[in-house]
Image 1 (spheres, rainbow, N blue to C red):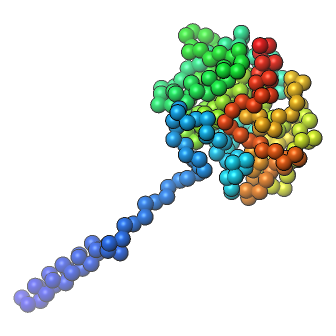
Image 2: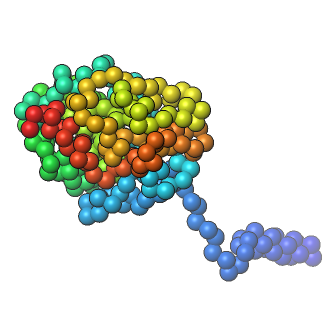
Image 3: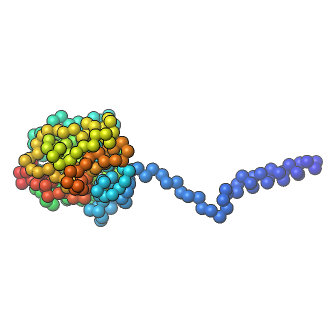
Length: 274
C-alpha cells in the first residue's frame, strides 16, 4: 500500500518535468520559413510603391548570392526557353503582333487581389506608347493573366487564350517584362551583336542553362544595344555559385525591372508603328 502513493508522486514529477520549457523565460525564435520566393526587396504587392521594386536578384541592386529572377522559372508540362519564354518557334516578332496595338486581357479571379499591380503594369507600357490593354469581351486572341510559380509568357501573339504567369515572387516590373514578351520582343542579351557589349562568363553558367545565353538572330528593329532595357538579364542569372554570368564591357548596370528604358519605348513604337 505504501508503494502506490510513492509511485503516483514519481509519475507526477515526470509529467511536470516533461511539460517545463527548455529555457524558462526565453521566447523561442520563430522559424525563418522559405525566403527564396521573395527576396531581397519587400514584395508587399502594393500598387502605391511599385516603381521602387527592382528585379529581385539583379546585381545592379547589390543583392548578393542570388542566381535567379522571378522570371527564371520552369513551367510544368511546358517547354520554356531562356527561363520565361514559353514555346517559341522563331525570332521574327513582327509576324505576330496584336492588331491595331490593342491587347485584350482577362485576369483570373485568383489574382483579383493583385489587380492594382496588373493595371499598373499596363499603364507603364501604355503611358509611353500607342499600345492599349482592354478588358476582353469576345475577342478570339487575348492574354489570360494567372497565378503561377513565377513569371512567364509566350512571345508575340500565340493565338486564342494566351497565358501570362504572374506568380507571388513577381513584382510589377517583372510583369511588364512578360507583357513586352507578349507584345513581341525577346531578351536583349541574346541579340546578334551582344558580344560587342557584354561577355558571357560561360564557366559560371549552370550547365543545363547555357542555352539561355546563346545568341538568337532576329529582328533588332535597327536600334542600338540597350544595357538599360527591362528585357536584359541581370549579371548573375543562372549562376552556378552566385558569380557573374554576364560581364558588362562598359561597366554599366543591367537587369533593372523598374521602368521602360528610352530604347524599350522606341522599340515598341517601331514594332507597332506609332
